[in-house]
Image (cartoon, rainbow, N blue to C red; front, side, top):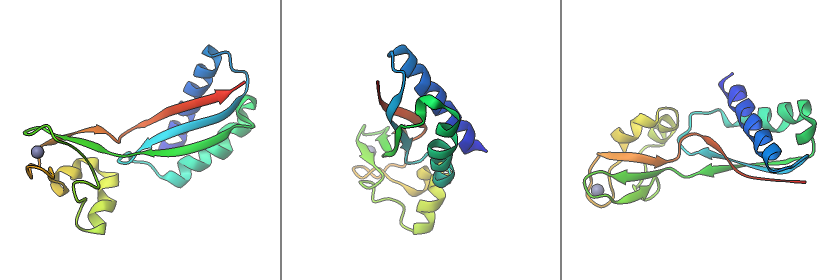
Length: 136
Ligand SMILES: [Zn+2]
């Protein structure tokens, strides 16, 4: 039920933002999900678009959009910043699959495209956040 808890947290913050911004009815909500965030997309999507709006009149007519935030890494030795695609990505489809569930595996699968170091940090691409809210 991890996805339901996340969807619930997103909706709560959205409603808080709306309240602060004097929005009575949310018409559009854009949510960003990190590329490496561990989440069952279909379940999250369902919770966010079907379950939550049904229980919350301020969301009943909102268009809810899910965006993917690409993972971004920074190499520690050479400070080069790169994405999953630029690193060449994991060689095997299976590794790519595993990495979405265990982001720590990125270090076993990826190298800095400039200096080939496996020593890098993840800057973006984990977590769930609200990208924008529109309403009236
Ligand atoms: Zn490097």
